Length: 411
Ligand code: SF4
Ligand code: SF4
Image (tube, rainbow, N blue to C red):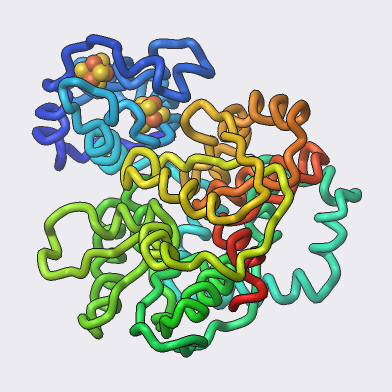
């Protein structure tokens, strides 16, 4: 369900759409088109629909606009478009224009990532949920698990990795001091993916870097920006950047590619620091480290998040990092170019999001890797949740966690 249009972004949207020459070269790269084989679920189909809507040739209240909500914003189409159509901008502005309605759970999650106070309330409930033993029951796949459907099951996937522990503001270096870095962990890192954050800190400390963590946690704004709330997204991004600029002498690192891309995108904060995705930084600083790395004899399926592939263009750095560990057999986890997580999409339309893992699950059943690694937190949760649902017993972790375990003797 979509509300009435506001017409505030109309000219910008139409200008972007006009760049499309309808060549269709993007279609084979679009995950929704690959899964549905339907022009409406392709970049070209969406552009034609958006154009007709913005020109007033269609009534947004009378037609099915679900294809616009199905777009995963992976931007694979943009990466291959010869006409440089700004597809990401077109779809985010259109969603802002149409203001998609959200369920109560999705609204609560979006409010929680935006407001540290609400996140605290959510964590208090989580504490109770964990303490009561209810979480163990759900994760064990018992009666309650069978009752969890769609959104709730996806939300449980988030809770699986959740932690109520607080991180320190500063973690000192544990070898010859090289300098301090700030680590942007985003709105979810501390609460929902603390293990990855702690592994990243341990690696940085072991390499001689002190690590500062900004409190309270703040959000890059990507979730709001991509889901019809551009102003709120920009406000959150500005807050995050202002916290990161407190000490301009530090290098600022980001853990999630999608957050790094969002914080670095656009010129509205010209004086803002450039955030470096942690993989790039570690590759550079681990270049001289050749000792103290254990041999890990494991078959590892490596997931390629679309943010690293299409926005940061640094996925090769992940492979470079993993290649420092002897004994690994690395396989590429096949997806349609996007695993379907797409931020809040894995919760707001869980059944649609799962479609993009159907072939992946079949492949995993044949290849039987020991581990899956993904450097995007949302993708990790989504894939991990599917592994639980399919009873596949394959753990999904961040590549940095694997790296840290291989460096266990050194750091
Ligand atoms: S978005 Fe680009 S690649 Fe796709 S149909 Fe339009 S011009 Fe062609
Ligand atoms: S952003 Fe991704 S899902 Fe959306 S139209 Fe482009 S390729 Fe398809």
